[in-house]
Length: 160
Image 1 (tube, rainbow, N blue to C red):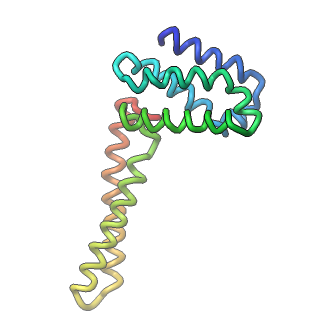
Image 2 (cartoon, rainbow, N blue to C red):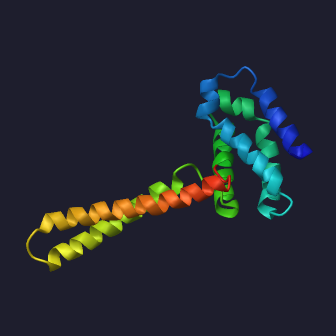
């Protein structure tokens, strides 16, 4: 870890000392600290991470007020956490647990239902069973593909 990252994380810990654990979880301070570590690690090669360093520094100065008092500082902190997470996902391919599993399950469910509905209208007879089979098959295939992709993310230690 570089000196910038250590100093920022230490400053966050100092400013939020004595804050309730419930508030720290609600405002996703753990996620913020993990993403600050990643920004510090990738800032040598990523211009967006370099740019975010100044934004992080300005928000850390008001982090205590952001957690305790609703208002502009809290909105800015929430925007910072969200933009850091989006950037880390998009540019550096870190994902939350089960991200692909949920995503591909939804896609599989939709595609399987559409295929089942199409076949249901083409073949006379047991109509609803074909739709249910397409729905189920799409969901299962989505679960398998998403699970495989999530496993590879976990093996590469790229969990958000």
